[in-house]
Structure formats: C-alpha cells, structure tokens
Image (cartoon, rainbow, N blue to C red; front, side, top):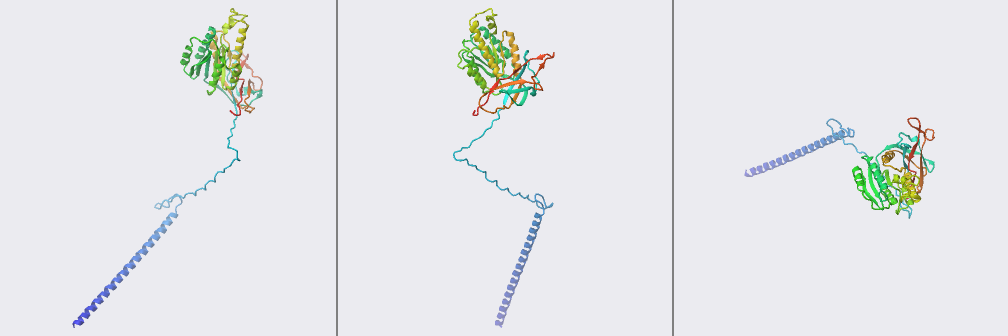
Length: 411
C-alpha cells in the first residue's frame, strides 16, 4: 500500500512537471509570435511613412513648399562651371627681353589775346571759326576752343641795382601799380636781381606780404645787373609749376656779367612751356632827356652819346624779344602816370584769353622749334574786319607766342 502511494505521488509529480513545461513552451511561442507580429507592423509602418515622405518631397518645385504642412524644398544648385583654361604663355625668342610700348598723341595749346590797338581792351565773343592757326606755314585743325577768365600765377622780377635813381624809381612805381591790381585768388612771387638773384617772397595770395617785400628794398648794393642769369633761374623754377605762368620783368634791359649768354637765354625761353613774359623798360624819362637830338642833358655819362644809345637800343631789343617770343607785351613808359594803364593792359591780356588746342600735322618728335601764327578770318575766310560804335574800322592786335619746341622721342 505504501508502495502504491509512493508510485502514485511520483507519477503525479511527473505529470505536473510535464504540464508546466508544456505551458512554458506555449507561453514562449506566443511571446515570440507577438514580437514577430509587432516587428512586422513597425516595419510596414516605417515603409509607408518613408514612401509618403518621398512622395511629399518629390511633389514641390525647387525653391517652394509642397503644401501648407509639407516640407520646404531646398533649391537645386546649378552645376559648377568648368575651370577656365590655363593662360597661354608666349615665350620670347632667346635673347629678347620684354618691353612696353607707349604712344603719345601730341597736342598744342595756344593762349591768344585779341586786343584793340588803341585802347588795348580785350575783344570778347569771337568764335572758333574766326581763328586760323598755322604751324610752320601749314594750316592746323583746331580740336578745342574756349574763352577763359582766370586768376594768374606770376613772378614779379625786378632789377634793383645802383645804376640810377630814375631806374629804381620806375621799378618802384611799376611794382606798386602791379600790386594794386592783384585779385584775392592770384599767386605772386617777388624776385629781385643785381649781381645776384634774391627771392624776397615765394608764391603767396596775401597782398600785404607782397607789399612788405617791396618795402624791404632800401639801398641797392651792386651796380651790376645780371638779367640773363636772373631770368634763366626764374624760368627754371617756373618749369616745375603746373599751369600757365607769367613773368613781369621790370628793368633797364642791360646785362653786365651774366654767365648765361643771350643765345642760351633764348633757347631757355623756347624750351620752357606755358610761360608768358611781359617786359617794362625803366629809365624812359632820363633816356629822353639825354637824347642827343631833344634832351637837355645831352652827354650825361652812361646814357648820352652814341655808345650809350647803342647799349640802350640793344637792351630794348632784348626786352621786346622776350615778350614777343612768349606772347607778351613790351612797354617803355616815361612818366609815372602811365603805369596804372600799363598794368590794366597786362591784366586784360592775362585774365581774358582764348585758349586754342590743335593736333599738329607734323607728328615727329624731333625736338625742332615750330613757328606758330594765328590769324582772324570772317565766314568767307578773308581777314576779319571790325568796326567800332561809330562804324569806323577798328584795328586790333593778336597776342600769342610765336612757337614751341617739339618733344624729343626719348624724354
């Protein structure tokens, strides 16, 4: 009986263990099947979302949204252009270096003053067709024309030598008359000369500074007048100043011990562009008084007699030449009352001008001196005739420099 019970218990325990094992296996199988089903659902859902996302992204055009809730499409970038080809390299033949070529198209500027012969007043309102320009006798084509009224840049070059009271007095009168007609925008320098050249004041717009420089001239120390040296040095300094410049040369015109000769002086004038020289000869009164034919002081040392007249005539000729070559004017006053009128004429010539530009028909850069001639013509090409208010013929003077020096090929 005990044995039977024991066997029965063993059998019951074995049956219970089998049932638990079977239940556990079914439970694991069920969990495995559920997990597989869930994984399959997630994969199906992700695939559907990815398909929908691809559909939404392919719908909009580049640069705009697909719908109100859809994504913003990123603009498509244009394909990058291909890189440029490498530059072509040209090799010079052996022994040949690189060089640069510069082409100069020369033009010539001519300042022309047209003044009445009697009153020296500027004649305005002339037109381009009224002017004819000749270079070495050949007509030139005008490419620029205008009437200007401008300020001046001038050097007052004064002879201050102990030669005669009358000469110094004329220099003083001329210098003061010049300063009275200056305008606020003018630039003026004052230079004196005897045996040496002295700069009293550099360029300034202050009229008081110019007058103080003139007041500093008290007693001359030398009798010599080295005019050529002084004018040469002044031209050399002005060559470094831009624009149109003027020299007002006031002196006797006599040169004593200059190192510069007259020929070199004339060459320097030709080579210096944009400079106009106005010359005023001093001592006109005392020269008239010592003239052999009319003067009461005939034979006065230094001025009377044939040698004195020749010296002064040579001085006058040089002063006229300086003015004529540069388009200026020469004056020989005898009385103090003439100086204001002289500088009124200079002012009219300086401040009122016609500027003419032409391209020379001779393009050679050979350094030669080219002669310039300016004429006034009417509509038919005949010489221009003018009349005054009373319909009487009006004579006029054309003030222009007589030439220029062409540039050198290598300069």
